[in-house]
Image (tube, rainbow, N blue to C red):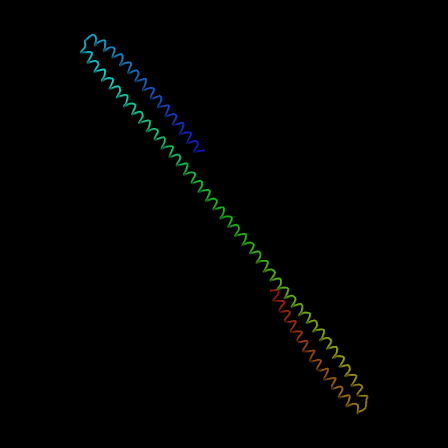
Amino acid sequence: MNEQSAESSGESTNDEAQSVEASGESTNLGNQQMGMEQSAESVNCLESEESTNGNEQSAEASENQRRVNEWQRNSLQRVKHLHMGNQQKHLGNQQMGINSLQKHLRNQRVARNSLQKHLGNQQITKNSLQKHLRNQRVVRNQQITRNSLHLGSIRRSIWESTNNKEQSAEASAESTNDEAQSAEASENQITRAEQISQKSASGNQQITRTVCRSIWESTNNKEQSAEASEESTNNKEQSAAHLGNSTNK
């Protein structure tokens, strides 16, 4: 729109210059016509005077009139050339102004295109940055999920190990109780055997002592095995408690 307005202003300026030129030419023609009328009147006057004064004065008047006419023609040509030069100079200045305005509009258009390109590059950079941040957020969430799953599996394995050790400790305790009951039953058998041996004959006493000794040795071995199982159970309970404390930490 700026270029169209500049063109329209240039055309209106050209029309004004042409109208000024036409008015100047019409003024010059009017002045020339008035000058010619005045010169014609002066010629008539001179002719009348020449006819009065004689042939000599007529020749001199003709020469003067010729000089006047020549001077008028030269003056008219000088004025016309000067006016045309001024008009051409004015038109040249106008053309220079139009060219400067067009150059300014072109520079504005180039600057606008550069700004649009810069804004487009900024938009591309912003989109790339947003994409990079989204990718980082996705990777971080995936890492958190993997860490949570890994920690959960570790906790589950620790709980299962602790549970298995507790069950093993309970089974060991039950086995110890069974062995203690068996030892108690063996002692009862020993007591009954001793009572029987006291009532039996002396020959049977030796057999009874042998049997009692074997029973006592069996009982003693069972007690030692019960003590070892109890120590193993205590060690397992201590290790389970230590593992539980480390799990809580």
